[in-house]
Figure: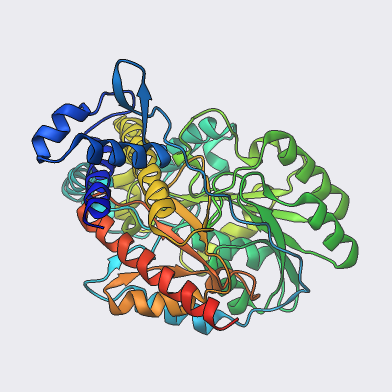
Length: 479
């Protein structure tokens, strides 16, 4: 028993070093003889530890050469299952969503629950400099009203950035908003009336469910594949039965699944939208965090008939606190500007000017390269750790960018109970029930991986994994 625990401890320590980047993919780890000498253990114990790491896909043996960190560690867990279609209905989860969000924001809680990047991944110093420059040299304008459609130099920079998403527009077609949610709610207000039916991906962003509740809209959830996005077949079946006024969806890195829709399916979706006269609201807030740039375009890039209102923001890349988003509303732009003028006017003048100045100075692309690399490294570490620490049979998403993971636990585990138990340990998670108006995802959680992978994160994840295993055992005993 002692020998077994010893080799496991050795394997765990080396696995931690690999995930932290001490040993990079392709590099040689210490030889069996050296590790045996360093730790004062037998060769057999080290060989057991290395065999354990091979089983995890973290290292590979090369004949007469030694053990090397595997180039692509084996993530063998299955991806989450696709949902089923349920009837439309008014949102009933708004109060539960609000309760979960309030609990997760408690001071001192380790934040696996909120999809917010760690402060280390925000260009705070550069933003401070730009804010200081704007308030010092452009004070009268910076502290005055700035009406819709927003600061022209910022709209020009956004138009330039949209080229990377495959969208060619003029700055006059951009409307600056108070974040992405502001863009989504204005889009829904322009396209719908209380009692109308909208479609959404399933699972979906909980903020959309809150908006639908606020606006008195019914929602039908369309199953989504963790890899290819919303089911076009299910959407067509739903459109044949019900009159859908708008579809709110994400073609690149959906929240929470992380799916990305292939180009041909995007074009097929637009044909369906045209056939059934469905307006699409595209939420592309994670689009700039695709690990491989210029590989996948936004849905708006293929919109030739004006069916897509595009929404995004800098919340996941620059700072959630600057509250700068934008939208491309096409034929609805005049109505959007009229609505914005008599509600929020526009986003904050000071931050619009500071962000415009930051983008003009050319540091944003360098910043994006850095955070994409960090998120990719951290996401991989989280995936492998979940595979190792969570109950057998756990399913894990495979996003091609961003920093969120969707995890499906086996059996009838209630992740609302997991959420409560984790909070008692000072850790927040996002339980699956807040991502749907149905009961289909009560065994799922969303994890924020926009955090440095370090000992604190690992300890927190180990705790959540242990709690999940306990709940699995409890659920198994109740069958």
